[in-house]
Length: 399
Ligand code: NAD
Ligand code: MG
Image (cartoon, rainbow, N blue to C red; front, side, top):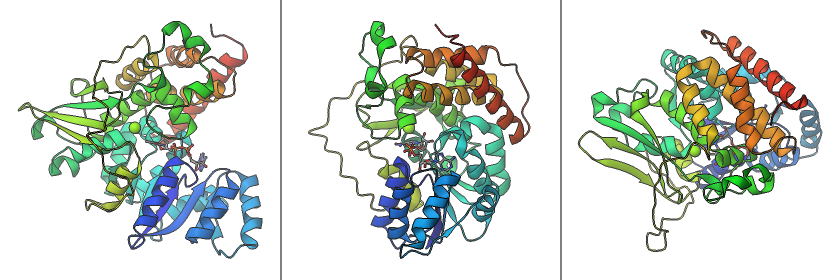
């Protein structure tokens, strides 16, 4: 039995993780659950899983949960401050961590677990996008085992040789005969929409992904394809891939979750129904196949597969992310920070869909190159970029 912490327990990945825990009760003790505000959801989870510890990042939600826990039959201990949470994550009470907080808010907890050499199930791609080399260096230093949860990166991992699977973060792709990593993406809900209609896209339209059911932010990121851009950066770090070794391919059916092409002409793909419980069960099985609760792919009723190159006019966010990837960590941190502000502003009706990429582009253009050697620098860049983005929105500087 391993003691598992789930960061982002009330979210979409949190729910899928707990579902895999239910299917495999002999494998994991749910020891710590962390979320932000959803008190009632968290209370239900505490009642079902009786975790030893529980934490809510929002203080109002934390005190509400504390009250409700008193009147429940569950004796979970509430962790009230960030420092205590980080210490708990690094203690020997935790073996494995599902990092599934959304956005840069997941950086500190994910890194704390990495630095303590835990087994890391990485869903929170934004933490790796922000901290890149520092993250990978920390993995190497602590000996943490890093498992990619993102379906594409999990697919790529499954298609790699054992030697590469053992060297996540510093893979020698060429040495192991890999010529290219083929990162697939559905193209989201607006793959065929006329570009002239893009300025009037509503949050309700953008949030409706054709194949996957996910949290709000990643759903909007999928509609702009910023998600694929973040995943491009994520793949660059996880697999130590060069520009020539990474390619994005649109595959609208989301059955192939990504592929690896080898120098002999072989292409290895991982396929399945689009359900995150498959990659989650893969990482939680730790190399052993376990039940996920996902049905088998039915080839006879599957749609026909198609593939196309991404159109950067339709998906400017993808291009911005691919460029930022080679500009350095200051650029990927700004890209991620401004995107978070832009997605929030779009969801609250303060900017148009087409202004998401404009905002990211504008703040990136005014960002100075900076060498990064510490997380504190990244957090400072993150705050500055968010301030700059909010300022542009308030002063109505976008067209
Ligand atoms: P979600 O919005 O459904 O859930 C987010 C979770 O994070 C919630 O439990 C929320 O309470 C918690 N949270 C937010 N801010 C927090 C904070 N400051 N402190 C503590 N907890 C906080 O998001 P999701 O779709 O589950 O995505 C989570 C992460 O997984 C994201 O990084 C996303 O990119 C990645 N991911 C998601 C999917 C998917 O299918 N949903 C697939 C691949 C990767
Ligand atoms: Mg993905």
